[in-house]
Length: 327
Ligand code: TRP
Ligand code: SF4
Image (cartoon, rainbow, N blue to C red; front, side):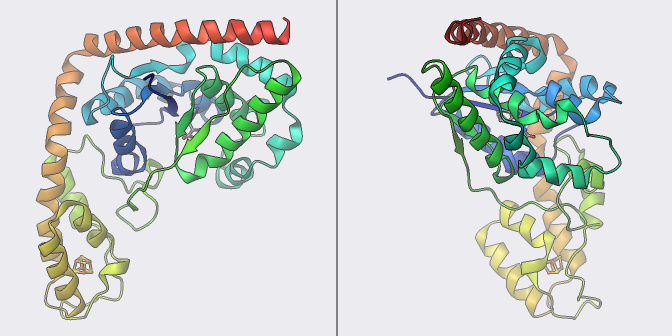
């Protein structure tokens, strides 16, 4: 039986951290067992917000692909490629932009949110408004069935379906309607309890060496009500505890849960237990990462292969779309 196809992309904006791992990558790795996977670096999408400072995009591409391979994305089993190396995405984006009503884009919730959040950047641009149209092109150019994304991206996949449906209706049945594929993801917060993000400076990176992890864990915010060692704590609101749930065995988790609430364990001790476990988790990833850093040609090869394979399929499907549209 043919495997169903999935497509997903990530914007290259820096090295990846635990938030990326638990929010997306772990799922990407698992999905490889069941699906034909296309994973790409969305460098054009990064350009919608980083257009004034595009250097960071180029720098991040290799870092990001190395992180992907180091956590277990496999090539050539999965097709790993760069969006801008498959210019067919851009042509389909142009075609789709003709049939996408402005109102669909203006009411897109992430559009409004980002305008609010990224106040320091001027993103009142044509490209930024059209972000989901490009995303729709990314997805349907491979006739993908499913799109693994986080909840924040579901509106974009829904918009993709609307656009594909409209294309099929106006011309002829060409694109399957893709569905979002949501996974259960553990909540990972940054060192300060806010969302883990490079821009908040609160992330543990996949590439962090042991001494950096030690230092970061030691600096983590805990239950703010716990001022003195004997104060009872509340692990439910503690970030350190949420990491223990990922890296410690059930007995330890229960013990910490109990001892924290009764003031029997101090935060310093609790963190000292955690830190080596995070380091142990990262060790094999870091090892593979170092291999790749020293073998850049291996990365070039992965991308050359992925770009070529993705492009062959994109070309064929674009040809069909042109024919359907009659251009
Ligand atoms: N917009 C996505 C994000 O910010 C990245 C992305 C671009 C994407 N094109 C895609 C995700 C196609 C899935 C499919 O996370
Ligand atoms: Fe958090 Fe551990 Fe301190 Fe409890 S003891 S508040 S779980 S760091």
